[in-house]
Image (cartoon, rainbow, N blue to C red; front, top):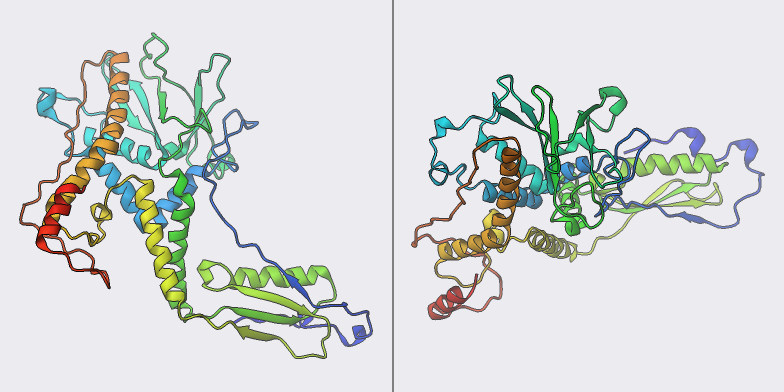
Length: 419
């Protein structure tokens, strides 16, 4: 419910003889709030390269992670697939007690998990390297990607420094700190006690500075799922308020009319308010008072909503290159498998070969290269995660209405030929 002040309800008595608008006018309201697939990177006057038009692109990606159920499940699954069973001390031929921790409060498994999460979410990761007081050992501290902004490259294409800020939405309030970059192109070792920043990103055809996430082509899909969830919540809390057309008396000035539009737009539009409105201004106040005409909703709307949501999930899974939605917690598709455990093992093996192994090697190789460049004679190795489900494990497939029954022989044949 909303209340408009009297001055917005129409003309005063003394203004009834003023010229009237010739025709009823419609105002179009644009509700588009899409997140760009590729952020704009441009030099700022403060010395760093902006990460997105407003320098807040990483926060937008974080928000999508926190608001889309399927997207978050995909990211978490990708991180777990990289970490696997953690540091493989057996393959490294070293005792766990003999490997010095990356810093005084973080284990290697935690440190690698932090890098893996940033890699899956941003396609980049960063950490600080500090030579300890003994002038021999080193400490490694994870630096969240969203806090880093890079300097512009020099004439040789080298980034020599980066800026850190706790919150880039208010750099003046929180302040910025510049750190020199650690690069493998220099043979000089870092001095004791001086922090250096290492930043690594995957290839980005749109920018040489910041990484482009693997799921970048599906950002609109992720936003759609987040809007579906907002719609569900607000539809319930608002009592499934219908959409409709709101007709108001005309206003004396354009400023008053726009003020009403802005106010009603803020109150009633968008997925967070589970409704849309059409605003029409009449030319005469002698007509009917303020009216709201609800639109009759088609009974097929629910089916269209469910179908759209299913397409969204399928596209998200494809964007993350995950072979089966069952790997992230959804029900197994009705594919006629008699042994779903083997299906999941095959699906994960396919993901491990095509995606997880490459991500794991990308992270571990970079960390080990940083070790070698600073004289650390240790090479980290991770033990890949494997599905070891019992052969008798059965996962019930979705029951699709109208699906044809599949014989056991056909199910076995499909299982042997499908990943």
